[in-house]
Length: 140
Image (cartoon, rainbow, N blue to C red; front, side, top):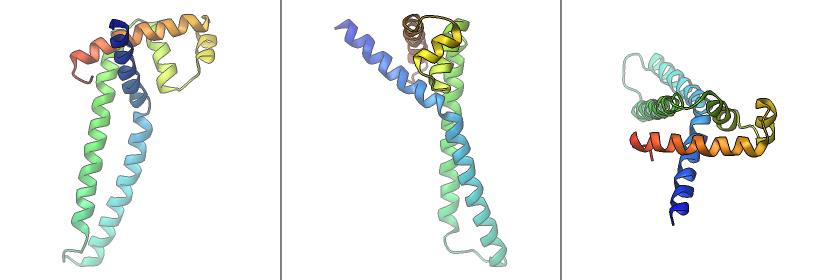
């Protein structure tokens, strides 16, 4: 029973780590989308000669939604990176390679000059520590 609980905690933590690894790509995509919406609003404002344009409120709400998503992603990034700071240097390198760089186990092992099994054990230990830290931060 305890093993199932540990496995469930690790799965939840790994899901958060995968989201963390993809944060900057998602933020870049959202910023491109935001620039497009801002450009559309500026164009419509220039055409309106001071009169309100149809549909601009929808785009203003879309901008607010995009800004909220970016803020949530940056919060996730800051919380996870704060938790990473509590790990050993090697554990942090393993998590960065696995979740931010999306490297396979063999590549991580070769990069760090360790056996792949040892790298996986370091990852599991680091995930347990991150999970404990994130549980305190209420992300899990």
